[in-house]
Amino acid sequence: MTLQVELVSPERILYSGEADMVICRTVAGGEVAFLTGHAPFLAALETGVVRVKTGSGEEVAAVHGGFVEVRDNRVIILSDVAELAKDIDVSRAERAKSEATGDDEEAVEARKRADARIDAAKRAS
Image 1 (cartoon, rainbow, N blue to C red):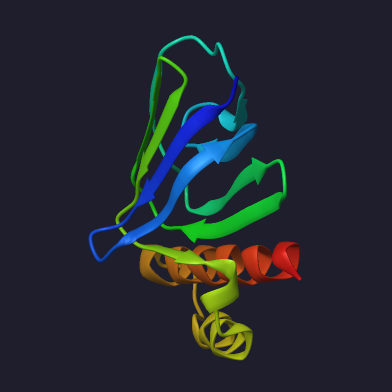
Image 2 (image 1 turned 180 degrees about the horizontal axis):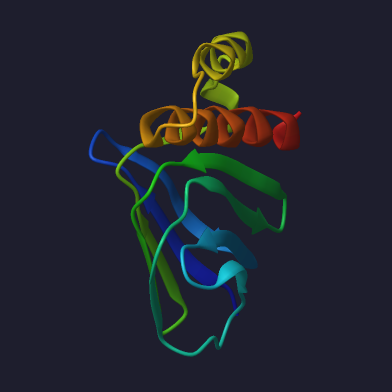
């Protein structure tokens, strides 16, 4: 048995299909993995990487906030902003990270978003 997974942003559905496992980072619980038969679960997502492991490989995406819900072997990830790793411009993300200077909340969040994009792109290559 597999999980039915949907990874959705306001702009589009990034992934819809079956998976053996989904790994993401939540605000309260850190990194968490979901397999078939997982107990119902709802959490806010941390800016980070989502990995959808399928029988034929892995889909990787950077997400910037949102929620994950697991119920009845279905994982739904609703993200405020999400990008598939294959669509990420790494040099643009590296520039954004270097331009995000300072310790204010805006700069810290910009660096987190850039790090998530860079990490997702590296995991997919």
